[in-house]
Length: 383
Image 1: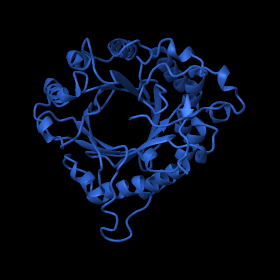
Image 2: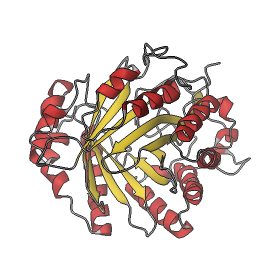
Image 3: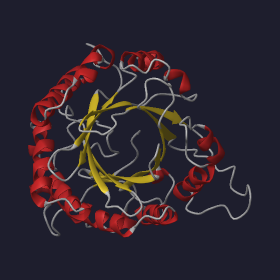
């Protein structure tokens, strides 16, 4: 999630009421307005969206009260403009979309060690609020939250915003915390401590491990997820990275790759097989639920669509094509973008950051669109 060139945000680009002066807004004004409007798009009751917004603000400490006239509180790479919040919508056929929010709770900390401590405190506050155990996270604190951590990430969390006021909680940790040269050993040891003693050898070859994630709290089947990075990926290679059994169909993975990365399906056999992602790399995610087999139960392919389009109008067109191909309603996504911002989609690129195809055992494929808050800046289009 390396940063790219940005242009200063203006009042016309802020996702709040048209005509609002950006310099009179705080980060809380911006993010809460977006969350409430997205909650309406996703069908959440307003009171529950407001509860989730309160939890997000509480977890960020003093940061939400900062004026948007100030620079971002840190170089958070949750998003390209360093907003410490990102949204996503998960789509399935014949189902309402699921809304999620990703947050870096320690973004206002003075260093990465304090960032991790603040993040851990936020998760423990949520555990008390929603009565879930942090035992798995506690078991790995020394691996991922050492006294002198490396890297630009300590701890992020995501909330899957469900009706009823009790979310699914996910925690994202940095395998590079002890140094990138130790990342593989850190992931291996973490999986072993969590009972997945055969899992590491099931992972594909990779240039790096961006995240290890845990499901905490109210999940039917909690997962441990390992993310792997794959520069210069091509569609046939993307399918070959899957290790889940049963896994996704080859035609589904390759179709999604082409629709998200290029905007169309191949016109003839092999006609686009050489397409490679030469800029920001693709990510894959391997979900583990079964400690006995050592095999992943799920596989997700993440395409950083913002680096392969001219502007967000083109990104929306690609997302629309992918959603339609997999039998999902794309109109909700356009409404979600309107809930985020009043700017024209052609005026920037990065509002849709990633598109992902998730395939889990005994479930239909899911497409997730990752949506930037753009509190601080908008990347200019590439026309």
